View 1 (tube, rainbow, N blue to C red):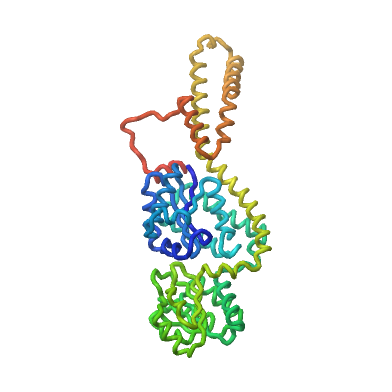
View 2: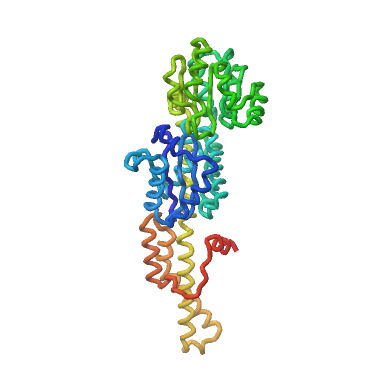
Length: 440
């Protein structure tokens, strides 16, 4: 089995494509089950955030699995594969494992070292568990991922003084307005990103915060914490003119803020500028709003310039973190390889020992031996078997993680007559039953 990682992110694809590929939480189980229904894919998980959409797969055929995911990206984007192929990347085996470890550690984030991504990776794993598409290998992979990320953050300073997307949005607002203490900020959405933004805003002196959310109760909870005012999305248009700064981060699949209400809000403000940051994917704010005089709209890709500052120290720490992640990846890959070689080694040892015992039973001329001599012959036969088998067993224990390793194991099964016999009337068991049997 191979680990395979296929996707796109903020480095490879524009926000317009990322928002087309974004998968909402309710749709994840169905998508994952659709993926594992294809024969090459045995296990699957998906990570869908504002900056990336990535599949992690367990497969016996990486090329076929990558092709299936590419086809999905083509379908969901509504674009021919040849038009989007350059935006996609794929990793297998060691590269796939290291990529996932790096993502979880914040080393592949828009904001280097940002901590929120680890929680998002954990959610991706939980979604796969809920969908029933995470088996033994993905379980072990994600446990190794969480351990690797923890080590990277505790043994380096990659996360020290780290910033996040919400903090960057606030920093960008400061660049536009300077002092924020007399500004009114509207947060559209009441999730984690909105809460982080509210904390940074409050820390920078903002006293007037409006929180608009589809569910009023969630808006009230967040507004209460920051002495703000809560409203529903239906009330949004009525309060737009009061906001100097709008930061939007909902999970909506359609635009929450449209041009016409914004034009009316600008007119009411008498030309005073409005600063909008859309950190949602799919985007919350219709990009046509940027054409309105007095409105300055930034999306998540525009934050790239902000995050370039104060990177030097974190980049130095990132090099150390990658070294630690490489060690963790090698440990996991050794375990993964053992899943394939260990049963073969065990079968080979059992086969050879069975042949050895059969030959001793046939050797009638040894029947007259006393107990001590019989034990000496037994020891000799075992020693000879081990001596003859040692090179083969050592080779099986150090197989390369590629097609060469598969070919070697296939040859060993053939040469030592270990191919499974065709049986009739044998009841087939499900993958779940097989896993349960393995754990007994």
